[in-house]
Image (tube, rainbow, N blue to C red):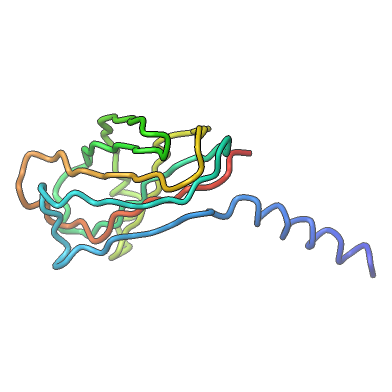
Length: 146
């Protein structure tokens, strides 16, 4: 009987190692993301810590395109800056029967920090329209690199 409890306990412990150390979402009013509404997330980090960052995109059936283009800029506590443009392919077909869709996209792996403090992460809408319909939320998740 003790052996049967060990395996689920190991699975539970392995599952916990994947849990985020930071996750935050910004909900969009009326499911519209204004191009000039830059989102800022403040992630607490520790010197020499390695983190993997993901973008969490919530969208509805009203989102008219198959891709979402963003610029994501990291401002680590050591004063440096890392900025990249990203184009994410949304899986609208697989999630076609789900009203509120959500996808997670990897944006940076094994990011190492030279100082402890707050790493600011800015997410900018780079779509060509001023008002991007169908975006319900944008979030950032960070978890320790395995």
